[in-house]
Amino acid sequence: MIRSLLSADYPRSRLVAAMLLAIVVLLALVPFVFPGARSMSVAAKILVFVLLVASYDLLLGYTGIVSFAHTMFFGIGAYGVAIASTRLDATWGALAVGILCALALSALLALVIGLFSLRVKAIFFAMITLAVASAFQTLASQLSEVTGGEDGLSFKVPRLLRPSFEPFENPILGLDVDGRVITYYLLFFAVLVLFLMLLRIVNSPFGRVLQAIRENDFRAEAIGYRTVVFRTVSNVLAALFATLAGALLAIWLRYNGPDTSLSFEIMLDTLLIVVIGGMGTMYGAVIGSALFVFAQSYLQDMMKWISGGLESVPLLAALFSPDRWLLWLGLLFVLSVYHFPTGIVGRLRARAIERARGGGK
Image (tube, rainbow, N blue to C red; front, top):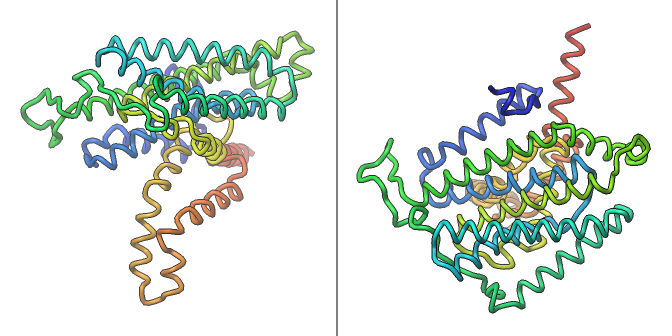
């Protein structure tokens, strides 16, 4: 059963397995253990980033394609839900229409970008995707009648997902179940299923070809694989999963705007998480997203607590000032790259393999 779910791609490291299990269990129990609005929002953001980063890992880690247009597809998914829910009634049908239209647009754009751009060198493809993403963000900001412009769109969701909806009179295990909790578990199970689908894709024969292209595209072409076709399909698949991640974010926030899903900051965060977690591992998306989003959300609070305890030492108190949280976040990133050059999962897997070989001698 587990072999089938994980597509025979086990963590291959006890520590990685323990970290993955802890993250999944904590995310599953957040509404019961940490029922506050902030903790649930952080957990929901982690879930969205797990899917977004995993989809980008399919592109970068498994295919070797550097694209800066990934957040464009993320934004298309969010805008699809927002626009459909604004123009139509707040129903499941509206959500379905928005998601399907967003998927169709993302597939078309990814196909066009792939067919016309993947024949050029990697740096030129990266620049092309950056230009396309910037143009799309500008377009979304200017089409105020459709997208809401800089103000974005606030919309209603089906009644089952609204915070005011309370299906049970009494708490369940101490938790007052409402539409917000239902929405959270919708995100949780959707991300779980979609992540397992991505894991299946990268461990299929198709995924093996992508890895061969990443390692040596000339050799892959020489043995009969049409690299442009495989790269284009990979680009389309990654775009579709990113679109679904954007749709889930919009459903959770019940709002979407240019800065929410199209900002270049999200693209940079995605790149950082892929590097921190480990490119070409998939599991790195889970661990990297959890660590990065947690640090991004709570590092400032932790520094405020540390600074308060060091008031007697003004220099140290100033060093740990909450206003310098970005400095410390950057330092943590540099240290993680230095100690884990192949990412956390990549490094821990390599250590486990080394120990297994050493024990076999």
